[in-house]
Image (cartoon, rainbow, N blue to C red):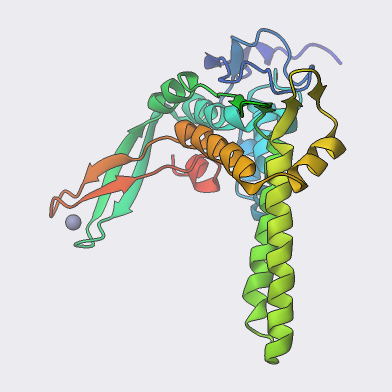
Length: 275
Ligand SMILES: [Zn+2]
């Protein structure tokens, strides 16, 4: 095909980002080029349509395809670590609509609709200053943990979503014994899913003489450990999660002065379309 004379007018990168994880939790080949200078383009019309497709949003398909379109250096968005996803989404939002995010919140006290403007650069700064502490010292053992990939995280939330749907359906079962049986079954599945998420987050266990990274060995160790050990690991993982979460802003109602928290969810369709 002949060179398109319009090519020089195609969209250009608006900003360049580096990733909080520095790519260490992604398979080689997930990102191409300089990891400290990843170009970010604004969204195309097609990207915006993708983000309005409910089914694709639920599976993460939309988000993955928009990341691929706006950050072409990210060859496989599914393999990106969850530590990086929110920064990437915030930067795509900035590259498309600028750094102000307008949000409307109804005051819980007087019902007034207040409009707030959130600066997305604050998000970028926050994530770049986050530190993911990946080693847990249990004394006799050192456990190395890792964040989930976007694919793992989406798979788990989808499974969780399906279980929540089934919980809702239980109420329709008329027979009490059957209802209880169905409820017990789901509780068991929820526990199993939780354990699976937990095990996936453990990369390896160092005994001092050997480093175990075999999945089956790690799973077997988890099922045969004192609960206090698993609690310690879980607390550490929760602390990482908390450190990573953007602290909600305190906002004041224009009408009555009532103070409340304003939190922003990044991986949502309205995040992109409320320009
Ligand atoms: Zn108010």
